[in-house]
Length: 210
Image (cartoon, rainbow, N blue to C red; front, side, top):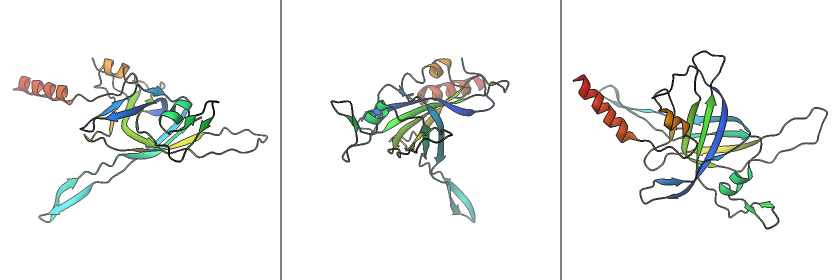
């Protein structure tokens, strides 16, 4: 059973990260269990890479699709301790003080999140859930100011880069064709695409038409 079709999307919710623990000989990653990043404010990502045309016979003969992933910013209330140690490589000392070291290695991770669907728009039943399979993040800037008459909430921003895995996977998202089981389990583990099942279903549908 698939999901009902949505009409609009806005907002951001349920941001999770899943650390890449290792890669096998073929570059397939092993992910840790997704961990919630609370206090998500906004996520802005831009597609990298442009299509280029190959010209022959006095016209566009072939279009080369150059998908270089995404870059952008994740704004959150505060970088959680788990993310700082798991991904940014910061360390807690024996006194519970979080420290940075210039030799620390930043880890790659999958980023999972969803866009809220407006309840005021009729027909919108589900949230669109996304997964960027291979991300890296830079350390957020530290910013503060003295307390004034009007208090302003300060947030932290992680600069993100999402690239392709060795098998070419960059991003996945749910849609009206997504099974309810897949949708409900989205944040339990990083989704692994099953193209074999899709191809089998397409072949079966084609044979029925014939």
